[in-house]
Amino acid sequence: MKAEKTFFLETEPSKLFFKAAIPGAIGMIASNIYFSVEMLLIGRFLGQTAFAGGNLALPLLLIAYAIADMIAVGSSIGIAIRLGEGRREEADRIFTVAVVSASLMSTLGSLAITLMGPFIFSLMGADQLLIKEAMEYLFVYTLFIPLTSLVFVFDNYLKICGKVRFSMLVNVIMALLCLFFEFIFLFIFRKGIGYAALGTSLGMSITCFIAMAPFIRGRMSLRFIRMKPSVKILKEIFSQGLPNFLGNTSGRLTSVLMNAFLLRTGGEAAVSIYGVFMNIDGIVVPGMYGVFDSLQPAIGYNWGAGRRDRTRKIAICCVVALAVMCLFCTLLLEVFPEAIFSLFLESGPEMLSLAVHAISIMGLTYLVRWISYSCQSFTSAIGKNREATVLSLCNALLFPLLLIPSLSKLGLDGLWAVTPVTSLLSAVTAIVIYAVEIRKELSRTNVA
Image (cartoon, rainbow, N blue to C red; front, side, top):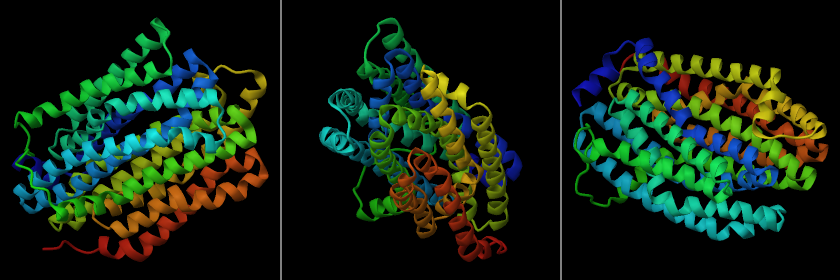
């Protein structure tokens, strides 16, 4: 406990960034890249129909995982602040309630999504073959989700306990295990999309036991205690994690709506092209999330301890890192769109030309994406739930819901433009929120 507190409160901010944020970003990318690798292998070994089916199902699956992530993020904020204030027993109680709640609620969410899956895919305009592929993929993940959902939970708690490098190692191991099982099932045994889901689920399950072991053995500053269900604790967890959940869930629902419009406008090919972009986004966003997520305990510790000067310096390091990451991603997508698309799918000249054009438009998203994401992550980390929720809803739900039907009138080009326009509007909203609500408080001197 003392070691973690010293690490977060006394380490020079730039050194803290390199010790925590960089391993955290690598670990978070590794912990999420398996979905992109999975889709790459599905596209390569099973073809365009399986790839499109998987990309129809993936947003729904990620909604179930977003429940566990919401609980992990929401509890981590409360835990970090309490540890910063020296209230360890309360932190342990939140930790115990959160672990049990995450597993139970993710399982219930996944069951509901799987039962409604055929109806949802039919509404989107999918044919029976696409529905079959998507449901096979969803069903296998649902079988394992009581365990696999906890991977995200314990990853957060490892970082709170100062085990950032161990968290990174665990995530790298998970990515390698998932890749190993997927390669065995798809390349060697030539199995279908359900076995792709099985390979990832096995890798995540093994990793969950590895991440859980130090806590079960009592070797971390967070410990399991006798659980006493508390409405107050659950309410705090959900309120703190709600912005993150709304962002994740709204984004997935937006993807479902986007896929429905794409199916009707450009067919299976358009869904596949959008799926490639979303798989790239599934690498970039976890990288951004990993930077702030790794330093969220430090921000929480310092905010709880009244150290506004250190909070401000840590935040600046994070914002600069996100800006560099996003601008680099834009450069790659604008310069190498053909090579990036070809990694996922083999296609003819006509589809390849359409994909290059689409990716060049959607790649502009990251020019300003870092602005809204930085503001949202920081406001969430210091408990400014209202501001974080507004940003999350605008970026993931409100702006896309307004833009998709209106820009769809321009055809596929209009639909490709939805993500960069959303990013621009969200950046403007974030700047306004920072200027009105955050700037004055952050510039204050240290609070006793």
